[in-house]
Length: 218
Image (cartoon, rainbow, N blue to C red; front, top):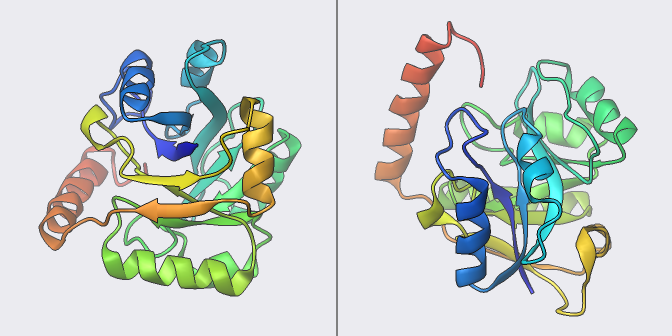
């Protein structure tokens, strides 16, 4: 079974996909599992948790003070703008696990030092919106730490859903079993990489959005 573990819907302030579009696109592309990980917003899960088409792992991408952290298996939204430690603690209190999102990404990654010095449950090893070098370093870092790994497309529009994903057993039923497979390292990760031109466009876009947000991190 293929699972894209990093997708944004229009509940993210930079996403355009409806939850219905995400479900349908995932099905069309042969995905049996997804995680909708909107920026600091848990509302999408409430809309799709009862669907019978694909397994949906509850998730959110939290903006800590130092960068983005992926939360999986939570039962509530996680406050933004806390320290890394407090964010991880809040994720655990919500019944979830905390993964360092795209740690080497300029602008929103938390970096190698923070990843190594905090008690993360795992690392996003591959992200389709990261450049090849960043993904290579993330996978190496995840291997060094020896903790569970994930991969995802980080899609903000339907066309990119599925460009990053993990594979696990087709016998899995329900998001709890899917998350257990991840935490037991019974997954294989796959991803494409963002090209340099895409990275430049992303950098310019991020700076402009940062300015319009009043110099506040997403």
